[in-house]
Amino acid sequence: IDALDEKFTPPSEFVVPGQNKISALLDVARTVVRRAERHAISAAPAPSQAGPYLNRLSDLLWTLARWQEGESLPVRSVTD
Image 1: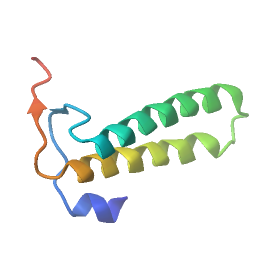
Image 2: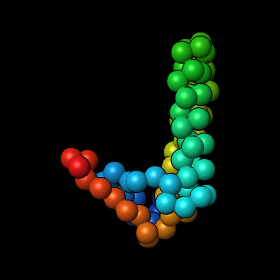
Image 3: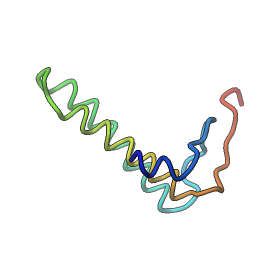
Image 4: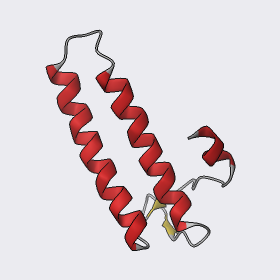
């Protein structure tokens, strides 16, 4: 994840998701993983590794989606 992050500058503003089919599918996968993370944290005993693993997987999916979109990232201000 970190090596891929170094290959491009992450956006500093809100990214409009789904600029192409692959990035849209990665964004949907990320929402599913985030939901699973919330369920795992609420259901698992305290020293579980499920939460941190799912959180890192979510980071990977977000990074892959942004990388897939490349330089054509439309962004909008958070105040818009």
